[in-house]
Amino acid sequence: MARFRTWVGIALAGALSVSLAACSSTGGKRAEDARKAAAAQGRAAVNTPRWTFAMITHSGDGDTFWDIVQSGAEQAAVKDNINFLYSHDDEAQQQAQLVDAAVDKKVDGIIVTLAKPDAMKAAVARAEKAGIPVITVNSGSEESKAFGALTHIGQDETIAGEAVGDELNQRGKKKALCVLHEQGNVGHEQRCDGVAKTFRGTLRKLYVNGTNMPDVQSAIEAKLQADRSIDAVVTLGAPYADTAVKARTDAGSKAEVDTFDLNAKVAASLENGTLGFAVDQQPYLQGYQAVDLLWLYKYNGDVLGGGKPVLTGPQIITKDQASALAEYTERGTR
Image (cartoon, rainbow, N blue to C red; front, side, top):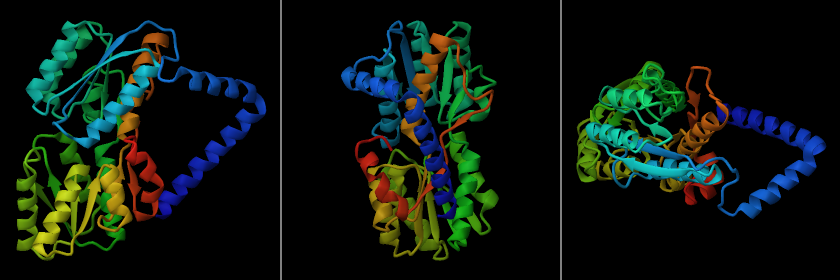
């Protein structure tokens, strides 16, 4: 809480100082820009060529997290006059084939996730050889630069895990279960390993089949029944938090359920106390920034990050902050 309030205070102070400076020196321009934005009503705000950008992610079907990423990308695409193509597959080889297909279409830019980097390396190299700029998002920050991407946008998964470990310590937790719903996903391993790095208690990993929610629930329930000393369950994605809560109820456990990522249901569960806290990596921003940065690169040769990832998280969200974010989660942007 103290860390969050400090961060918010700094952010608001910075925003206020920028706002005051802008009002005093460029108020007329800001007003004109606002009028132009209102007049655009979903039309492009620029007159640059209508480039085609493809985003290929490792998302499975029905994953609300990736709906938010896609929403951000689509919004930026409208603004930047981009023809935006989105595809996904949770099987790494199929995802690589989708990248190959985008290369064959001779798109002007590619946005890709590297959840299973070894399977994606050749496809990304093919895009680079074809002269297509690539930006990686969400997963694969450590491999992004080596693979030739312009930059990586997302949260550092190890740092995010460490933040969770710190939060569990502050809450007095002693034994935690980290639920990994996609085996082979390097980002998920980094999250749990990050938790273990800072958590002063005992951490156990539980691998589940994330495509089968009843199995996920059964696996968590069995662990909680077998070990009553588990006082925290950490899920690595918002859709799995509710499943963990159901497992906790059926197991008769009092373990706190915490999660990575945010959506409307998680925000509501934080507010009513069903969940303890969530780690937000701002998926809308990942999609929006990826498209925007590709456009900036095509238009002006701009690259952000200075060779380092552009971080969109982590931010610990608790009950006290959840209500303020409810409006954004309901519209699908947080």
